[in-house]
Length: 141
Image: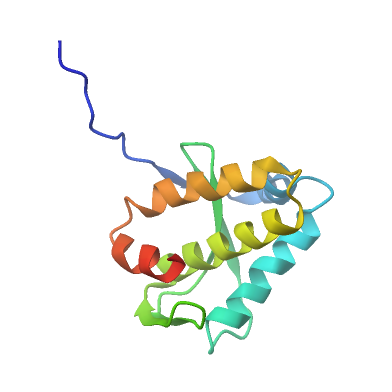
């Protein structure tokens, strides 16, 4: 009689081993996999002043989305000039912000690649359930 309106929690799974080589082509496509990876790194450099490279982990989301995450346990200050956001957040939350900016940028430059914006919204859905959802959503606002 009543419809269940509770959203199912989106799970994330670390990609390991040989599966890592399939990750970028699966989400960015063969034509954009190198570009996509580099755009993520460029937004890390742009948004996180103290970013100077590092190891990245890959995560699959149970809703079909993905993100690349800095392998770092320290908080990261994210500053977005366009909306005057500046705050410390976990490296995981900062990575989500970075990926969302990268996906939005890539889609704006490749609008025929609708999978990019679909992945943006899948990541946003996951971000809205994150323990730092308010910070993430404020950063991308």
